[in-house]
Image 1: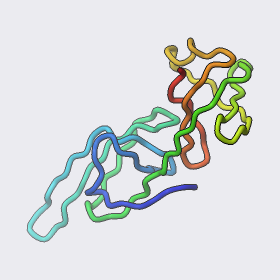
Image 2: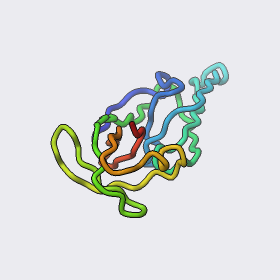
Image 3: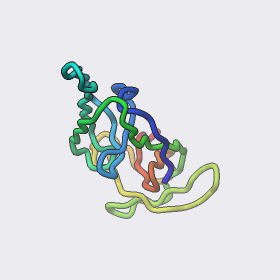
Length: 131
């Protein structure tokens, strides 16, 4: 798994964080300074990259959190096999199967020989764009 670490206080909207083992994109960050001797807390709301589920993280701003490293690749669709797609990476020529996206905009563009951009995050792959 390719991850790095940062503090909760450095997270911004649009960045990525691992919550409960799921890579998520941050959609909201609110910080609250507690009482006289307390440390500042941050409330992070994020959407799961693969599941689409909303997740929250409440932690002190100086706490370390995992940040996934996103590897972006270009591939070519070889075959449409129902709910999976066979893709060949255009750099390494590796072939693999990947889940067909559920978004109508992406699913309608999927046809053999089309190029696509996919992300590899923590050992899992997701189609982001079909060209």
